[in-house]
Length: 257
Length: 312
Image (cartoon, rainbow over all chains, first blue to last red; front, side, top):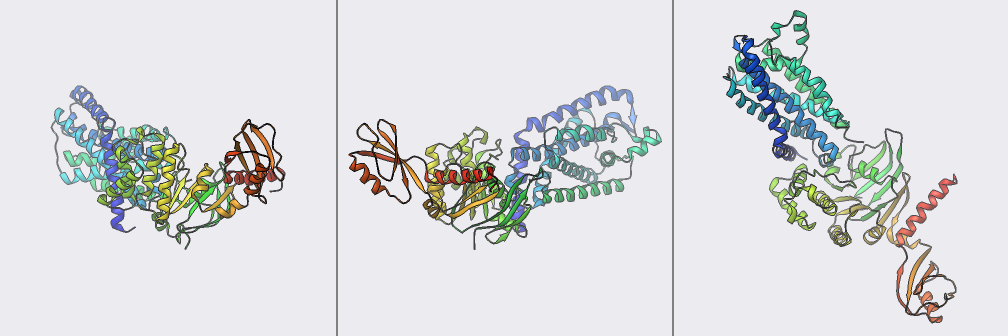
């Protein structure tokens, strides 16, 4: 098939993924909205008042970018891992595998679904944040580029998880035991300047710290890390994960006998 | 150019199971081809390899001259497949499933919708197009899978037990439909456990057993190799005693029914002449079993028997 036809394949898959997100909106959009509202109420409103200011901002304002990014990360990842594994489990992934659809189109189509859900949830969480605090945008380009790129990275991560998953347990292990700890320790609720030096150095090994801080820089103009380094890390992860997906799917890992 | 050419195809699964032990197979363009074999014989593995859902261990596969190692996409573009197990997104609507499949073959949406309507109408599912696939009956899901496989007008259609669980009325209409698309030029490979279906539809037959090809020839030639056929004959009058028919083995089934074995060297005229001579009036006659079924069991049983004796 030529490039135009591959674009039709990609559009078809994006449409399919988008309609899946919308069809099960009670599962995809509502739960993160409720969870994040609770975070704003408990951490921001009730506890945040006692914490006072952080990096020159109210605590609620300070954690808002982190909470938005946390919802984007978990939903981008969760959408792709559940959609791809579901397709594997029900075997309708074969619809794509028997067709002359390029591997890059399969990857981008699923990633697009994850990004759409991640950004939709992120947008709704931003709207909720407006009920609790003032939302700043210091640099719109950085804000949007970081949130989109981070969403892509975690959608790709979700795809790799789904490729290797053989049972439903396998799609909850990484989000529960890897993604959640890294996100909570990734500067969502605090500045790493509050940590002892050794903990600061360990935190710098956490890629999510760079993504959360880059996003916070876009919104508030403050960050614990260098923005250029954050972009480099996001791009390296994104490129590496994309090519890993290409190799895995081309080799048929987890999808062909 | 053959529609499908398979040379020395071998598949050893990761758990060590040898599913295929070097299969050679050729299917001519526009043929209606039966690929038969008992459960676990390797039929689905062959289909999986052709459709790139299973990786082969050795051998070559070409679809309309496109080698799947070098030109997989070109080979895939020629193929439509209806797998044995349901592989539908049961939460999606019937029409979406078919339209999306067309999209995965690079067909623009307008054309995809047109083709989806054609295929769903042919499969008598157009009225159910807004239904979620989960709500369809088993037979409807099978027909939906056929509609989905046909949406990009494949040159080679592979049907892995397409009529399993389908009622006889729908099965007959599917046979008619498959005959029509075959006459229009689509090559069809059919695996089925209904041997009557294979005998009725297919012009060539191959039988796989234990990962080996044990028969591959035109259906008519194959059926001619049947050594004997068994008929059930219904008589007008009650049978007082079993008629003696020279050259035939006769047994009584019930008061009005005889079972008669006819060897290949005999013919039905001789049988009727012998029945006439005994004054037996026949009102109907039918095969005890399907001819292909007899050959199939003969072949697979003989092979198993030889295998049990350590000969095969």
